[in-house]
Length: 548
Image (cartoon, rainbow, N blue to C red):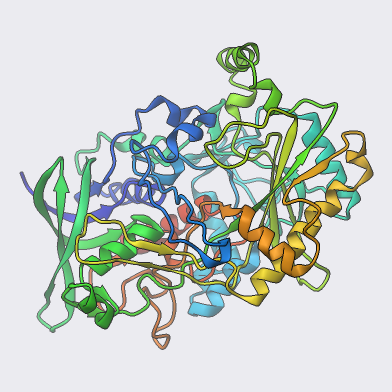
C-alpha cells in the first residue's frame, strides 16, 4: 500500500469533508482523509431529532467533559464533539447562521488580510450554498446575499408552534423587530432559524461534500483512523517541515507520509491536542507533561472561547408544547406518523426553532446576545421532558471576553485533553449574563404571551440583583457547543498566534490548521457554517499555492 500523499486531511468533520472534496478535484493530487470515528450510517444521525441519541453516544461523540468550572458553581459539563464522518455537522443543531459582518471585518483588521473581510467571506459562503430561496438553481439572489446550486442545502423548518409565534410577537413588543433573514451581515431581530436539512432529513457535510466524490481514484477515506502525533524533518534550508503522521488505524499502528501539506481539521479541541502531543506548543509546559518539544508556539490550546447558554424555563398554560405531546404513547405515535408520512413535525425539529438577536442592555453597540427558543422544557440535556406545558428560552453572550484552555495532561496521545472554558470569569461576561436573564423576563412579560400565563421556573424570580443573577447563571448555564480559538490566526508579532492569515502554522512548512480553532474571536452566532466558509477559503489558497 502506498502511504504517501500530496495532501493529508486529519478529521472528516465539517471542514475536512469540504477540503477533501475541493483538494481531490485536481486529479494529479493524491488526497487522504482521516477520521477517528466511523461511517455516518447510524440512522439517528439523519433524523433531525436524532441529535438526542447522538450526543453523549460513543458511536458518534468523543464523550468529552470540561473541568469543574468555578463560574458554573463547580459543575462539569458534557462537551459534545462529533466522532463520525461529518463530525459535528452529524450531531449538531443544524442551524444555518453566518454571524455578523463586523466579526469578519474584525478578523481582517486583526490579521491584515482583506480576504477575511465580510465582503470577501460572503463569496465563500455562497460558493457552496444551496438556498431554498433559489430552488436549487445555480444563481445568486437579487440582494447578492445567497446562492443556489451548491452542496450545502439551506431550508425553512417544517413545523409550526403557536407558542413560538406568540413568543416572537412578544419579542416584537419588547422592541426587537422581525427579520426575514438572519444571514445578511446584521442578524438583529426575531425569526425562525433556517436549517441544514433536505426534505426533512439532516444534511451533514459528509452527504454534501464526500458522497458525490467518494469514488474519485485520487481520494482515499480512512475511518477509525486516529492520529497520535505528527512527524517533522528539516528541509535543505534548515526549516522545520511536516512530513507525515503516526496513527492507529483499525486498531493497528501505522504511519503515513505527506509530500505537500498536512491539514489539521480535527476541531478546536483535537487539533490543538494533536499539535501538543506532537511537541508543538508551550515548550516548558510540554516538558512538564513528558513531551519532547519540537516547536515553540505558546498559543496552542489557549484562547478557548465558547457560547454559554443560560436556559431560562417558563411554565405555560392553554397551549400545546412538546412536553405533553411526547408525554404519552399516543402522542409519540402521532409524532412518528407525521414524520413518516410528511417528514415534518417534532421529529424534523432542530434543537432550537425560534431565534432572537438583540442587545443585552442599551449601552451595547450591537446585538450581543442570541436566544434559542424551544417549545419544550427539561431539567438538563438527556433528562425527561417536564410533565407540564413548558418552553425554554436559552440566551447566550455572543462575544464573551472569558478565555479558556485545551491542554493535554501527560504524554498519552490517546487520552483526551483537559478542557477548561473558564466561563463567566470576567466582569463583562457576568454583567451580560445578568442582563440576559432580565431580557428574557422582559419578553415573557409582554402582552402577546399574557394569555399563556408564563411562570418562570428557572432560574426563578427570587434571583433579582446582579450578584444573584450571576449565581443563577452559574446554575443554569451550559455550553451551546461552539468552541473556537485554540489555534488562533494572527500576525507574526503576536506571540500567541498559531497560524498566519492563510492558516499556515507559524514556523513549520507544510502544516495548516483549518477548523473553528483558527478563529481569533468567536463569531456572533452558530459556528458550523462559518467553519465551512473557512474551509472553502483555505481550499482555494491551498490549491493556488500548490499548483505544479
